[in-house]
Image 1 (spheres, rainbow over the protein chains, first blue to last red):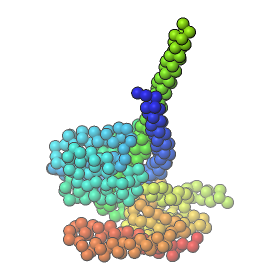
Image 2: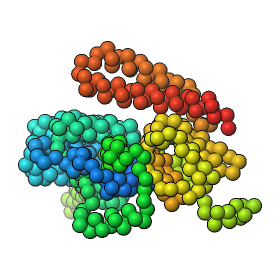
Image 3: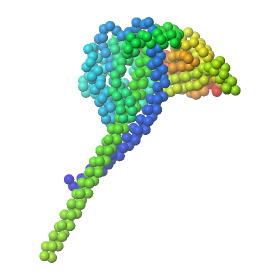
Image 4: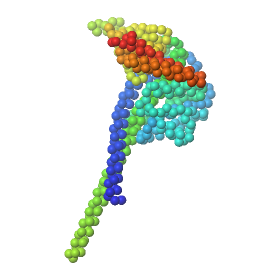
Length: 292
Length: 154
């Protein structure tokens, strides 16, 4: 490799480093915004969550939305990924979790996706995708969550799905996203049923909530909203995770680009030094030959 | 003066929060909260019994001292518990900040969509659902415009 080639290579590595550094900075800003958004979203989602528990504990309802169906023929899985790549293992992890969940099922699987990456992945693995929602992964609106929520609730109500799961990257902190699967429908009851029976009575006597209209009617309106809310929360968490993952992926890309650039510069200097030394030796030996 | 008021009713005070998925729109003290819930209009004062209900597309009014805050809201949920009124709605805009033109545009858009859907609705269930959804958007837009006209200046 000539000196010229090396110079060109160093230049190209430096350009890459500049680009990844810029992306890293952009992602850091976007991450900050997404985190603030996550904080703003919490009061609403937490309250809907609490209301769901209040009502679910008291409703004497045998609606399949709560209790589920006896036969489990179809399971819908909605996987949340990003639209764009350059985010390290962000999408791979959540897709792997999806594949695990698919394998655990004994039923037909209806696959729904959000984000271009999931659509590409399933197209490549020749898995049919029932519906794909794309184009909003880096700043999702509630309107989108509503659209997805309505679609999934509809699948359940039309008995095209007897259970509905959501798989997404939960945002733990800027560096860690945890691929998580939650059941949206039927609405997950509290984990410890027996203990809950006692608590329920206690809570019930402490705050006798009046439901207008009855808990069953409220439940019918709340469940779809609850599903939308969980999806919205997941989309916002996933967006924050996406920016976090991209930021760290770009950081390590910048680091290794800088390292490579240093190595190449070192190599180039050695090569130049070697060339100069060779020239000096040539001149020196020529002079010696003449003088000798 | 405020101390005296706090003493009233054993120092108990009603609070109200209007919350949307994107942010908390109102969070503060209230003398009275008026809203339209599942079985009609309700006025909540301090020490109201705990209830959980729905709110309809309409206006939520909060009276606090001499001030009156009015919000145009979409449909959602309404909860009173331990002197805290929580209004959980997808959309809530203070009456003074409503963009009437935009609200009217929404109504117009929805009406256009509605006529398109009813023309090519071959699938019964799906068409019905779509119509309901658009109808809801129309109502929200209409409500915003109305609330702005009635309570806008202030």
